[in-house]
Image (cartoon, rainbow, N blue to C red; front, side, top):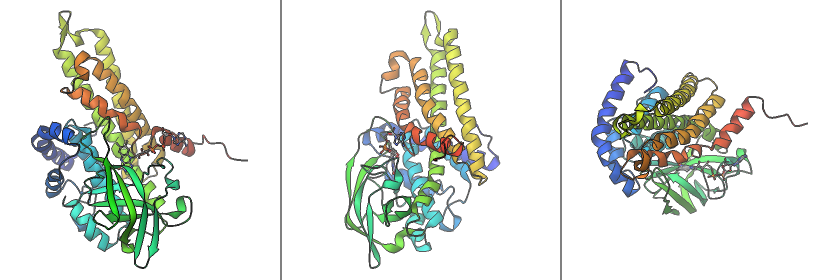
Length: 384
Ligand SMILES: Cc1cc2nc3c(=O)[nH]c(=O)nc-3n(C[C@H](O)[C@H](O)[C@H](O)COP(=O)(O)OP(=O)(O)OC[C@H]3O[C@@H](n4cnc5c(N)ncnc54)[C@H](O)[C@@H]3O)c2cc1C
């Protein structure tokens, strides 16, 4: 925790910490092996009001601002499995926030309210086997047929893909480019929807990642979010929150690794003294802490702008870029002090090291963040 909580957030943090300690941490190893967090966790978090933190009160959410999401992310990461935070946030932010923002009352009643209660699990599907960073080029096609859309195509790398009950899906409803894209909610029971492989990953094993297929999948046209062909704007708006979540996860995970390294450095003896008796380790961990605090400061600035409704695209990208990239370095530094134990499965540091690998990819790669910074900070020459 690096931001000062007001009384309400402090209370929110304390009860969440208790819950994570008692109901999440003891089961993390089991979920890492199973390759997914259980439905019962969504149900428990939903019952206690943690899945609708900044979603509308009318549909059962708490209507709070992103500063409460900060607490949610930080406390979930403390369970020691980044995959848990990724699964929960993919549902409670990525898949649902846009429904809250752009869905009709019927769509909110059908998908958002049960998602907030933890009764239905959501996923957001934008990425395709042949299209990732270049969202405007996506190919999954939705054709209007009477009162329905008929969807044909495939998605990949979808968090919660094999467990989701509904998928907030990016489809092409118009011509080429970003103006032809829409967002539609697909119930996973719809005819023509199927799931592919659950993908095995190098890190965050407790977060389920899957392929999805749409084979002339028929979905009521009224499940469209916002206006037809306005999906690209909604996706980009959503990316701001997603990138902040990723920056926050990176910061929280770096803190946890640093705390682990500091404890181990005090305990482990070598040449007759604790490892932290050697100045080289004091200085190395001092450098690591400085890096973490720089990442936290950038993230904090971006959060303040975002919560105030200011334009924060570049600041969010800077936070995500720096925190995500530095997490790799911090993971290496913190793991090194553990010597051989750093690569043993039973040590938390090894798991955290492995989990840091995806931070420079998910919710937009580091290169895409640099693109945004370059474009918004006058680094791209005008075409003559
Ligand atoms: C664990 C995990 C969970 C995910 N969850 C989801 C999810 O729930 N929903 C979802 O829709 N997606 C999800 N993704 C997908 C993720 O958003 C994409 O992987 C990411 O956007 C990159 O797309 P890509 O993998 O197709 O890479 P590509 O776009 O093919 O890029 C490959 C490489 O080329 C670089 N590159 C591409 N274009 C440029 C350029 N113009 N200039 C310079 N470099 C460039 C990229 O930065 C990258 O290094 C997830 C990914 C991971 C790893």
